[in-house]
Length: 408
Image (cartoon, rainbow, N blue to C red; front, side):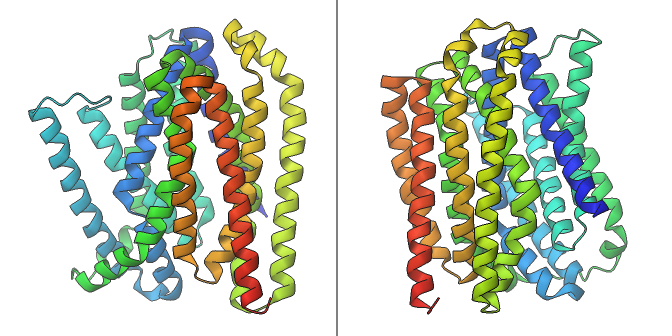
């Protein structure tokens, strides 16, 4: 119980710090700066996803089944990631040499990507090793400490905040999380048998491919609108959009931390054991919790929204309050889709999940371009709502089909 409460508190402090930072950017700097900051976060997130290739899905599954081979898995996964970092460096230097202009193309961002990715992999490793408190402590250092530091500089030191300062602060926090994680597993590292198992790595990449493709498509549904808005409407509109996204995203983080992360193992385990009653009960319970939380959070956030908007002092935000309402509807369907997602994972329908997500992602990106051009940022969030509903509906239909096929 102590561990669960501590995890929720650490996650709460982290999301709270990041939202407060965005709020202060809007209030004391500008909506344009908030938009640029949002684009930086999105770029880091998407690049890290490509770097990791979702290999952790394979390695963590291996660790759970082979707990005595922790050192083997750590070493070989590290070898794979080192190769990825070298490829990233080659691409980075090529862009610099040929003077290809890309936003955020700095050495600080390059090193941030590496240490942030290592920190994320350590987090996933600790989760697999059933050390959730340690995992969330290093996660808090990566995602909560640096926003608090930037808030301190902004409010008390009256420091001029730039994206470069944010990246440098974030980089220091990421390095600290990696160092702390490395110290924890230092004893294990001393016992590593330094042999590269190419077959294990290639096998893992083959299995991870389906998860990676599906995750990439899903993140495209979540974040492609940022680039489209920035391209067609500009940083100010992106700042308004990301401000309301942050308000809605609090619900996503809370739902995952309090419900999904604790309940999805029950869904997987019950289905794996063929326990129809427990599986259906776990799925219904998770759906009920998600629905009730979204309703409760919506009532709470809309009751204080006028106060939040008054504090920002930005009149532009008032005419777009509908964005928050639509984000919350989309988030509800998006989170509800995870119940069918994990149910299909349990019966190894990874390819079906991949094709469903890719199809919806393609619809999302194409629709977003036209929606942003003709409807502005309201069009973007409308497309997100429709995409989230499609994920929920199609995955739900496939879940029922496969379960009926298996006699459930």
